[in-house]
Length: 506
Image (cartoon, rainbow, N blue to C red; front, side, top):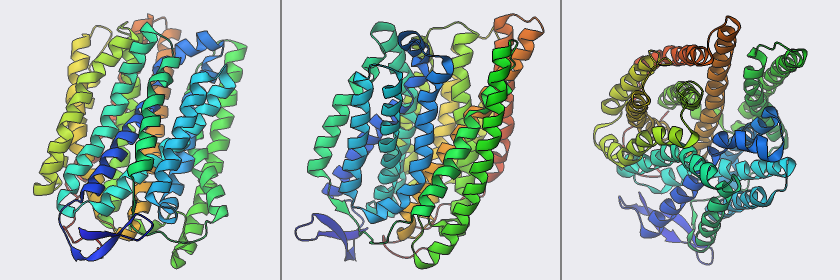
C-alpha cells in the first residue's frame, strides 16, 4: 500500500510515493467503522419480511400494500447503487459516510414515529437511500487503502456483514414481534445508527482523491428507469403468476401481468440507452457508471458467478421461511433460529476464508464452496411436509458454509482485477448485480412456489402438501440455476498482487 499523508487543513489521506504493506491505524479505524455501519444498515433491510403479517393487522392494510414496504426498499436500492460509482469519486469519504448514515438514521426515525402506512413507506425509501451508499462506500474504501496481501482477510469481514446481517435480521425481528411490537425493529436500530453517525463524523478522514466531473442528469434518469423498471417488473412476477378464483383476484392478476410487461419493457429500453450513453461518456471519463470495468475478463467472470449465486441464494433464503412456517408450522422466532447457525458459520469463517484467499487464491475456496452450495440445493429438493425442522437447520447451515467459501473470493478477485481508478465503479457494479440478481431470484422462486401451490390446492391437495410441492419446485429451479457455477469456479483466478496505485492490466 502507498504510504499516506494528510493534506493540510483537509484531513484527507493522500497517496505518497513510498510503498507500504501495512494498514495505517486511522485507515483501520475507518474500515471498522464502515463495517459496523454497513452491518446495521443491512440488518435493517431484512427485518420487514417477518413483520408483514403484523403490519397488515396493526395498520389495517392489504398484503399488497405491506409488500411494498419491501419492494420500495429494493427499488430505491436499485436506483441509487448504480449512481454511487460516480458519487464516490465526486465527493469525499467523509461526506458520503455522513450522507449515508444521516439518510439511514432519518428514515429509521420516521419509521419509528410514523402514524400510518404512507409515512412508513416514505421512511423505507429514505432508509434505502442511505443503505445503498454504504456497501459501495465500504468496498471502495477497502480496495483503496488495504494492501493487496491483506485484502482477502478484510473482504472476509465484508462477507460477515453481507451474510450475517441478513440472517440475524429475521431472528431479531421475530423475537421483537413475539415480545414487543414492530416499532421496536426501528427503535433498537435508531440509537445504534445515531452513534455510528456521531463517531464517523468525528473519526472518518477523506481517503483518496476526488474529481470535479459534472454529473450527467440524463444518465441518472435512464439509470432510474432502467434498473428501477427491471426490479419493479421482477417484483410483479408473483402477482402475475397467481391463480385467482374470484373476480377480484383475477383482476389483480391481470393488473400484475400488465405491470410486469410494461415495467420490464421500459426497464430494458432505458437500460440499453443507459449503456449506450455510458459508452460515449466514458471516453472523456465523464460516465456515471464506467463500463470499462467489464474489459477485465476476470472481473466479468466473477460478476457473472456472483449474479448466478445471488439468484439462487436470495431466492432460497426467501422460500425457506415460507416453507418452515407454511408447511412445517413453526413460529416466526423459530424460523429465525433455524437460520442462525448458518449465519454464525458465515460470520465466524469469513476472516479465516479471507486469509486462505490471501495465501492460496480463489480455487481452493471457490471450487469446494460452489460444489457444497449446489449440492445442498439439490438436498433441499428432497424435503416435503414430513421433513424434520432439524434437517432444514442442518441443510441451511451447510449451505451457508458453501456460500461463505464462495462470496469472499468473488468479491476480492472481482475488484482486485481492476485499475484503482475503477474501484468505485466496480463496487457499484457489484452492488447493482447483487440487487438485481437478488430481486430476480426472489421473484422467480416466489412465483414458482405460488403457482405450484395454487395448482395443488385446485387439485384438492391439503395445504401443507401443496406448500411442500411449491417449495420443492422452487428449490429444484434454484438447484438447476446453480449448475453453471460448478464450471465458473474453475475459471476465476486471483489477480497478481501489485503495489497500491499501480496500474492493473485488463
